Length: 172
Image (cartoon, rainbow, N blue to C red; front, side, top):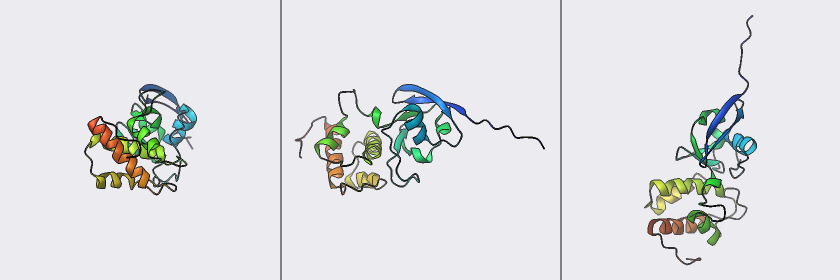
């Protein structure tokens, strides 16, 4: 009986937050595990591992995607953005991140990176997203700490700043 020859590892490379990264991956290795354990980008969190909680949300070619449902080999040559890529500089937060800090929109922070990635994508695609559209985007994320009120407040304040370029008071 002939033996099937199976390649056990594949070379995977893609752009991560503006820099080319590469590593080996088994065909079944999830993008979350590749990001965290091969590349060292630990801002992407692993929650439910079923695509329900949203903690693992990243952007693949500009669109939000669940990294726990994506195989690392599927993103060969793609442009991936994680929460580490949101800040404009290592000593400065993005408008969205700063708004979450100012409005206390996180407690344990486990869900925060996924929420930020989804909101970042929404505000780039629809700068004038309605409150209902923001709520719909957040519906794909589970947070067990904040009760969502501060998250909505932070999202609305960040959206206003992004649209107008004018920052409001810290506790608006």
